[in-house]
Image (cartoon, rainbow, N blue to C red):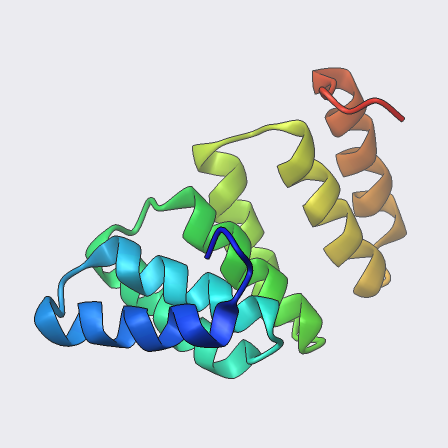
Length: 126
């Protein structure tokens, strides 16, 4: 994973999951790796397995939202990012929801989320 050799990492994670089908981090890492190589549907399956184990896994929720957006499934991504915001209302989450609302042509909602994000602030140097 650290070397970004995702197909090889997926093979290793397949083995880890065969050895322990409840290994939440193996599912998460495999889902992330699949996301990185644009295997979004397969990534969604793995990320949902993580959420079956830990429904509050914020990183899995963020990655699930990312995959859904990559597939232009913005209406499905919206409740996911809403859940993220309930668990972790930070700049990234509000800006992510603003992007989804923009794609859904909710200009007013987009503006509110952008304003909320900037009210919270961020740690990026832009």
